[in-house]
Amino acid sequence: MQPIAMSAKDLSVSYGDSPAVRKVSLDFAAKQVTALIGPSGCGKSTFLRSLNRMNDLIPNCVVTGEIWIRDQDVNSPSTDVVSLRQKIGMVWQRPNPFHKSIYENIAFGPRYHGVKNKKKLDEIVEESLKKAALWEETKDRLHNSALALSGGQQQRLCIARSIAVKPELILMDEPASALDPVSTSKIEELIAELKQDYCIVIVTHNMHQAARVSDKTAFFLNGEVVEHDLTHNIFTNPQKPATNDYITGRFG
Image 1 (cartoon, rainbow, N blue to C red):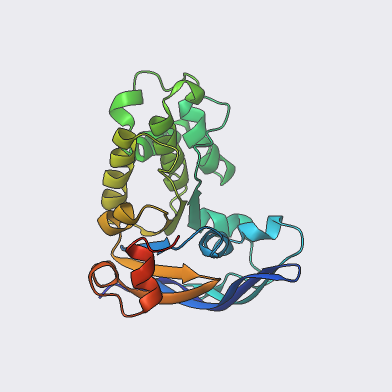
Image 2: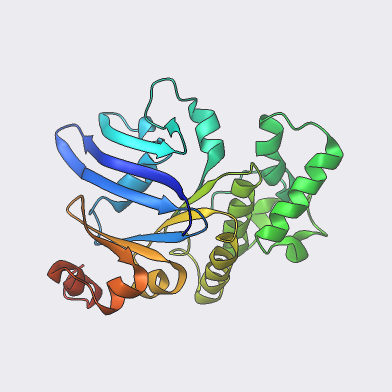
């Protein structure tokens, strides 16, 4: 049984007077993929953004409850948010490479966190691109603009940029929804490889994708977790009628 990499306990999020997440408690195991599924507006992306305090950037957003990464209280006022986001990488729905070279996209984070040695940076860039299955496609054009890459390549570059700072977890908010089927397949293959080293939490609207890539699945509805179990159980033998209705397409 894998150790717990992160835990949320009674986590609630509201925007002004509008609750978005209601007392959600979830554990995320190391070297596993957890998929968060549910209809639009159910709170899954809001919950995901809470895990590395991205909701801090939203006016009138109030977060209560606990989030722990090992023995660190994520929501503590004393938490260094920059250091926290080094531990918890984020990959967004649409690729967002910096307007820099492929090399500089990867080197930016390590350099910001104190790595100055050129040889070390070269090693980090190569290792990160290899882990993201992008090295062979980019090794001869590292100093070309990242914006010249295809959409799927840009998304893998963003994953490489995330893992360059040695995170413990990777959060993914619908990382393949803007990609074509071939690029989507590559991202899913990459997720399967990355979970050998990382805890991954992924929000997806794609039921087939959740079934393919995740070890566990949590079904969100109206800001609450209706059911959380092994993915196989969720998709073959859900215990709650609402879960069954959602995965069989009766709503959502």
